[in-house]
Length: 218
View (tube, rainbow, N blue to C red):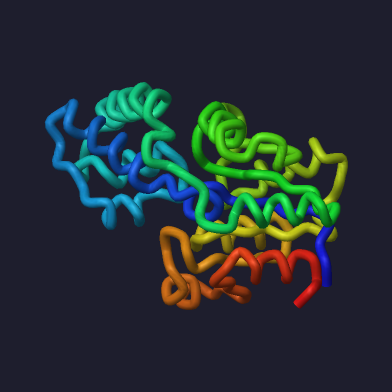
């Protein structure tokens, strides 16, 4: 089948943000004397929003007020350094251009702060997405369906004929909670084996495979 709307996760799906996220996390930890983490450790901290990232990164038992201070420092640093090492995965811009040419509407749904999501979309994908949304007050983060629901409301559409593309277990649950078909990608932060272990039904290894599934040209 073909889809009319394709909703993409950001980190690990369309953008490789892992180095900048690791640097911001370690900057914030270092500022308060906490142990820093490797990029492979941070890989498994991300995916459930910035608050959960910091909760996982700080030492177990860190008081909530201290976690909040680390989050504030993370955000301060990341606002300035969110695009130092970040860039699209190979073939992603071409995928989005081809989807646009094929009449597929596209959107980004991410647990990153909303301002960062919109800044990164403008920087790397200006004009290629019809809508984007990130974490903001009063809205549950993924895997709750709230953000996808907001996107479909903005696009004046329902989830029928929509597909969600992501790279993690959070994305699997987001798709299912939102009533969307799912496509998982193996090039992101989790990898094929992890996705298979977490029940992914469809896994793609290249943007070309994603294009064919979305447009029904398999």
